[in-house]
Image (cartoon, rainbow, N blue to C red; front, side, top):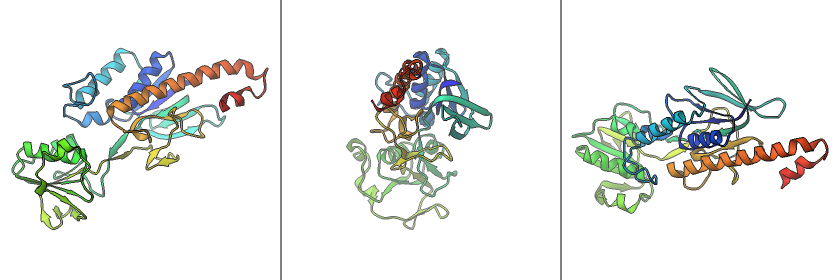
Length: 306
């Protein structure tokens, strides 16, 4: 049985597994994809927000994560699709099952990140959902482009489409834009339409106007493993300040799948580290308590209450 199984190899999961491993714990990182890195794998853009990593694209950051796990000999398994997470019948520890087997651990960390909101749209040769590769794969030169959404990614993608030679770019957002002021300045006000709108993928129209390309930039939602029923906070897994899921000993969550403050790459790294330390501290307390429980009934309950 592992000390911990971490589900998800994005920044939060990779950081958590790395720290647990270097803290001397027996950890296994499970990633459904063919590489670690999470959403950074979809970003060919320079990430200016990660301290000390200036000039690197999201994809380069993801590659560095993979290299770091390998050089530190952190046990990890790629292509492992989790199909179930449940407490062991004994109540001690957890079982994580997938198509290729079952892993047992005293602690489980859910670090499955987030995914772009689809809003009823389906990716196609003319519709991109979310920023990065989803949009960059679509040719926009000489075409009419509609961007749906009013956040940073919507305005970013509008600017990128302009730079790639789009004939025109129009932004549609139901509420006043919430993008950074620097981004707002890069799109002409007459190209930003605020208020209710109707977008039709089959007809490739927005409010009756025909477009060649539609970019759906509705933000992100937590990517919660199928079948996992937990208390949610605005669609995210609710955790306490230790990253623990209330009422389920040994179950933690880290990064953008949770309700922690200001989700982004940098805070996901930090949250993964915090959860790793929480698990180490809880395990140390458990090791101290175990030899004393038989001699002092009620000690475990007192320690948990503390």
